[in-house]
Image 1 (spheres, helix red, strand yellow):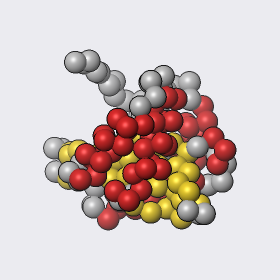
Image 2 (tube, helix red, strand yellow; image 1 turned 60 degrees about the horizontal axis):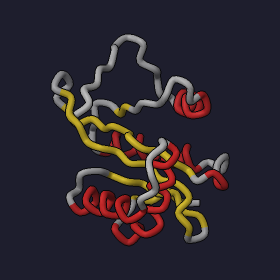
Image 3 (cartoon, helix red, strand yellow; image 1 turned 120 degrees about the horizontal axis):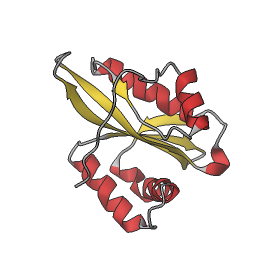
Image 4 (spheres, helix red, strand yellow; image 1 turned 135 degrees about the vertical axis):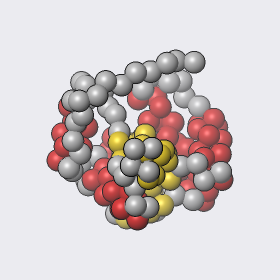
Length: 146
């Protein structure tokens, strides 16, 4: 298995994985929409996507979006998406994708990386915590749906 930065050449397989990820969060299937969305992010350099590849097949991905820390006066990254196809879980792909994310943060001199997951997602929480991520118990996060 190898972890590499995604390019537009990966879009056909990546869009399928991205669509499965969205379906996991109860969204309607839309592979064409997923491909269009990802193409826009890549072409506009609005996100960084890493893929886990095994035998020419994409088995997982993570997508990070840049933000900025006014307090730290540095870039930061939101690890927004992480998904490994069900039949390829427990092979180390998620850990490899997290490692690539950390390396991106270090290479860009980022202040931090952050992510969120459901409080009930015990497997993901255990994965993140075993990879050095710390749960924030100090701040509340608020959302305004538009």
